[in-house]
Image 1: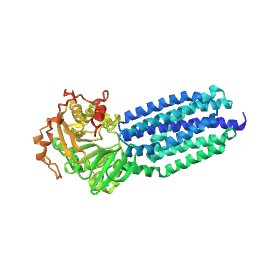
Image 2: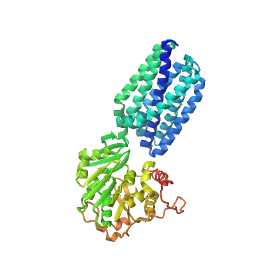
Image 3: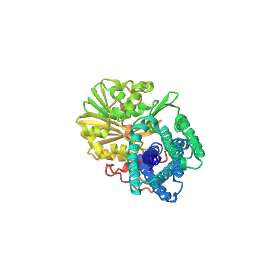
Image 4: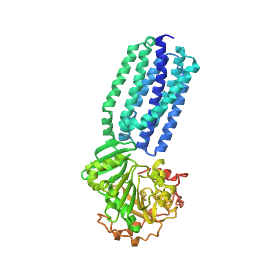
Amino acid sequence: MNQLAIRQSHFIYWASGIVSICGIIFEVLFGALGSYILGDGVKQYTLTISLFLTGMGIGASLSERVMKNLIVAFIYIEFMVALIGGFSSFVMFGITAFSPPGTDALFLYLITLTIGALTGVELPILIRKANEIGVSLNRSTARVLFSDYAGGLVGGLLFAFLLRPQLGMVKTAFLVGCINLIVATIVLWLFRKEVKRFAVHAIVAGFIGVLLLLGLLFGEEMAFTFEQKLYKDPIIHMEESNYQKIILTQKGEDFRLYLNGGLQLSSIDEYRYHETLVHPAISQATNPTDVLILGGGDGVAAKEVLKHKEIKTITLVDLDPAVVDLANQNEKLLTLNEYALQDEKVNVIHQDAYKFLEGTDWIFDVIIIDLPDPNDESLNKLYTREFYALVRNHMSLEGAMMVQATSPIFATEVYWTISETIASNNLETENFHVDIPSFGNWGFVLASRQPIDVKNLEVPVDTRFLTTDMLEGLTVFGKDIDQTIRDENGDIIEVKPNTLIDPRLIDIYSRSWEYY
């Protein structure tokens, strides 16, 4: 082979690795988009991976028809991947903001299948071209496949640890699209002598490049206006941490914290939630001094605990440092949590709650569980019998725990499933619910090894909502949301504990919130 052919064959192997990196990034990007916008991360990643692989199979089958003009075919496949993939996140946010429900899911699944199909066409073309240059078919196939599989690993790592945390989903899509375009442009230049109408192809590449660069520079700002449509009030802070999207909104005196699109608190009524979450558990425990808070990175639950002067230590375990940093730096959150996380009694640990309990031998008098709802596999494990067994084992004999347990009105079966799961660990339980205007009617489960008599509970600290006299009333549930759950036919539904082996809560949760 001459020097040009050697350079061409070498770049084909490089190109196969690079386009594989881009393909896997698009694949996991679509999964992340589905998880963020549509919810149920496991379901969305399963669907996107399945559709992407199916698309690759379709593309590989269609590649049999591409036997001539291999380089031009590859170039225009890359052009399409660059353009469609680059604008995917941007368009997804626009469709979510302005189109009827369900359109966003249809678009996501269609574009996943499309990019998968285009990716499936790429490799066979590269293998044939390498063989055409003069490399043996066995050797070219092995090298191209090696570059493809190795590129898949690199792409996954880049997305998880660099692109998503640093650039977010919109800029990542545009950047990866630019990389696809660069590969196509280099191939066009290396094979320019055998490509007819070189100037036309170069102009097309330049036009696509301008679109992608404009998207890279201004797309996120425009997508921000789309995303604003998803929230009731103007967004005043938005960031993408290693774990989730964090958004603060404000309208008048009401500012709200959202994590991955889910409302976490509203400044106008959070006290109803946090006072109910904290004070009954502290009252139930005998001589409490050490408190564990799982979740609660906004610091508001810790503020309520600090009202009890007998508490000596508060250990707060929250996975995401970005939430805690925001709570310690944002003036509005600092006003709300009254600098609670900076109190000398508070020790903040950034770790998964499950792993923390598995790895520590500390015992606590009160355990407050203020975690997001169980809408995916990673959160579901924090609502299982196994998890509550860990919590029980780290609770003192006369201690107590309180669990936020979603809405007994909107998700009745979910609420009572959580309650049954806690009780299945030989714990006494008492059920509470309270009206919170920004959330609706919300439920909590108080648990202890000792019998719970609500008449003996009290609220001895200064509060805005909760009083001792109110507590007994919060344990009364209407007939439509009590523990006797019925299906559409009026038949009683048996409530069973949620476990790691049988994660029934995810499906129940998804069905319960479908119309809300």
